[in-house]
Image (cartoon, rainbow, N blue to C red; front, side, top):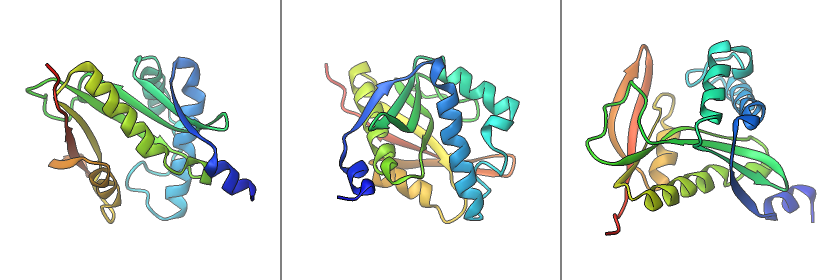
Length: 181
């Protein structure tokens, strides 16, 4: 069996993260920015690595200290990260019902990262069900060919509404949850 096939066959696990994971999460975002830049898709996060932007570093450190960080790992290597918070960011309308909000999701570009995004979204779903909320929301970049929005739709989310932050087009999506009495 090839090393790549072995990596893909090893179990993907998700663990809670802490502020000590900040460098790892920044590395995942840096890799994603490099990959998108090579593909000519700079509209989502630009071309500057997160680790070189003091604003982004602070943002990631806050996320990592929020208690809502989850890290996907395969063979002991971090291959994805998700931040789940009880409220939406300021640029999204406040929810009129209980929810959890996926504030950040990134996965690695290596073969070992395959399935990390979906596994992290499933973790978010499980956390939301356990919290007894009625929905899970997320927003994402809606530019380019719309592939990121399509990814969330394929993961069980439905489109709610679009928005813009400056010239950055976004899409809010939700996944309705059954509430258990």
